[in-house]
Image 1 (cartoon, rainbow, N blue to C red):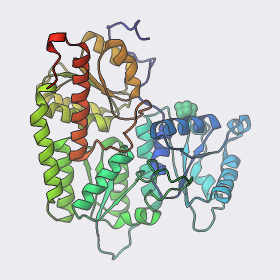
Image 2 (cartoon, rainbow, N blue to C red; image 1 turned 90 degrees about the horizontal axis):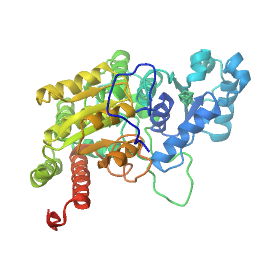
Image 3 (cartoon, protein in one colour; image 1 turned 180 degrees about the horizontal axis):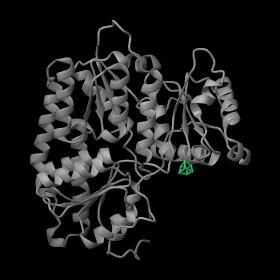
Image 4 (cartoon, helix red, strand yellow; image 1 turned 30 degrees about the vertical axis):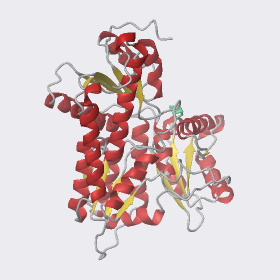
Length: 455
Ligand code: SF4
């Protein structure tokens, strides 16, 4: 399918081929689902909303619900005020959510609808809440949309109760899987640190099949918890690109000190998360986490010969890539190419610093790039392994390179919603996936005399 791709990479500016990102509202919708009894609302045409819901549904394999302002030609010309007002009225009347989280689309942004003014002019039923974020898709990516909606949660919901003693820690998990959010909560619970995590999609898009359809599952962070975030000891924002803006907004609005860390993927980043939690709240490292870390180190020692020195190319979202690049370097692998579709100088700088520290002079980091470029560079400098989302499978097949699926979206495998990649347990899973992919390729292609039972 991609056999015409030539290995002669040149920076393009006027055209993207096979983008390595998707549009802002998808991330905003995913974040909104992490509030309990929240209905995401897309202010734009039905087509945008259908695409966002479909993509989220395919990744999570759970029905994703969202309402839309259903723009037609009239709204495009005269603005979407009446559509949104009527839409909100209908949504509260028919679907009865506690909160509606509005995201904009390219169309409503181009028209210039003022969502704040429209919401002010709408009769929101008593006890119900409306929050909103601007998510124009011609800027940033789905990660930017996620970040904007997290910031909106703080802007519209967080409160500081004067005179109340600061307590607990806010955790902003970043754009990770529900399984990762569950693992972050498990680690925080083991550390005995009182915490509020938002958003939290773990009980919303990875729910058990009970035989009954629940429009609003039990999960998601309750609004009252997000309101309390203004009285915390501190905020830990995991992932600069998806969580930093919300954490700084909370610092500005309620004076809660913010710390921005990497996603806790890999041994170093997980250590940093745990130590920061204890620094903010006090406490000691529990035996369970010490045990899990020890297991991880043991496996790294046991199987390092299979991945040490192997060349790997990674693509995906900046927060995941920064933590993953650090981890694969710690494993002794050689990340020759790290590429994100999301623009961002901070991402390029962070990865370059990791390359410099590991003396990887020939490695390449690219932001705001696409998968066509990724393929061209791999053709010029072949690798042993690709790590990225499902869209990498075409390149992997063409070049006969194993692909470890990681990031967003994963549309052709299962497990990502249920098995974490964060924490020590998650790092163990990443090693398992990397080692299995490399050994499967070896078993399938090695000469008969090298085919071994014990490896
Ligand atoms: S028009 Fe904009 S918001 Fe709608 S699907 Fe396309 S990129 Fe996304």
